[in-house]
Image 1 (cartoon, helix red, strand yellow):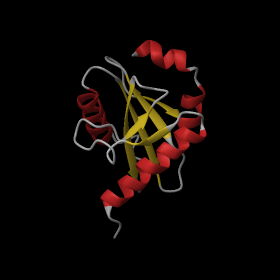
Image 2 (cartoon, helix red, strand yellow):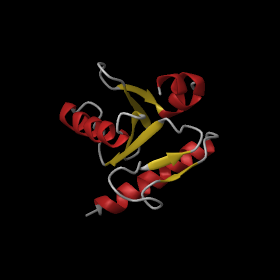
Image 3 (cartoon, one colour):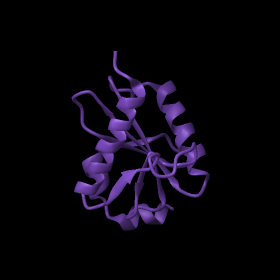
Image 4 (cartoon, rainbow, N blue to C red):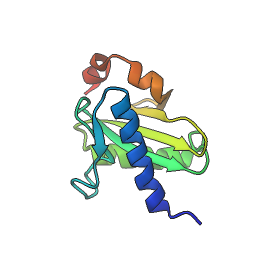
Length: 126
């Protein structure tokens, strides 16, 4: 049986490395600040984004209850001051980013497409 906390920590580290490799220096947030209000990943080039990382065994993007729970957690932790983004990957799958905008369903983009978007677009949302 896989330890879900350890898997979550590995997922956060893996996503931080993906951001860094894409030119956005990042690090795990919990190991530096801790607490519920801390993002899973801190990214200095995207200070207006609150990252909520979900590394799972299976693809859960089409599971409405799971996505609703993730969104609620991300938006609560973002505190209305940042844009909440869910980063999700499942075993043998790619990373996806779910953009949480008020009044809209979660907008899912592959992480490579999300990170290729000009930062000015993301910054305008914050």
